[in-house]
Image 1 (cartoon, rainbow, N blue to C red):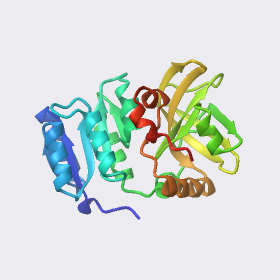
Image 2 (tube, rainbow, N blue to C red):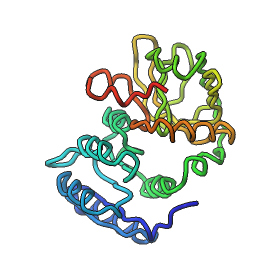
Image 3 (cartoon, rainbow, N blue to C red):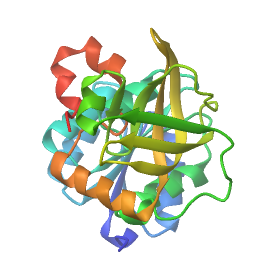
Image 4 (cartoon, helix red, strand yellow):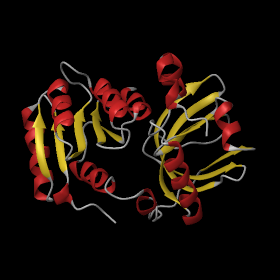
Length: 258
């Protein structure tokens, strides 16, 4: 069951008062109670003092405490809530970093406020409710991943599953550009996942290309299994990134071993 917007406080964080006020006004129209902050330190203090803040919408570029540091602090103290959504410059690798650290979503600027609102509203749904309906558009490409088990997939260094999607190194697969839809056939022993995903980032790797894909639909029986895995593993990363984890040893815990 969806949480009512009236039970939720949204914290909007941006140094630009025009963007801050515009977003706060939009959220208020749809029934959310809103708070505002102009920098990362002010945002952190509000998050620590007000447990009713369930959603944070912030610019990744923040003074005093950066957007990435804010994500890291939140996820160390609050693994699930508040949901964290960030705005980033077009083409920025910060989106990959934010999703690996535990942000629940990121939008490139210039962004459509309606897309941001849809993201926020979907965050109030359970995993099974969120991934229940397939998109209207059927993807033309399919990504197939096959390992004897999820544990072996994780240990390969070529695949990692997170709270909202996965990263995979693909050698020959055709992959849409960032934002494109792709059909998914993940065969992981007795842990199969089939459905559709949206490409969130792509970059070259030593063995081909590494892609970060967010789940947008999973078959009912697969979604149930995925929800059970999330409940028992509680991974921090929304979409893990091998590069981000490898570059910061203390972040190795972001990679669940299944």
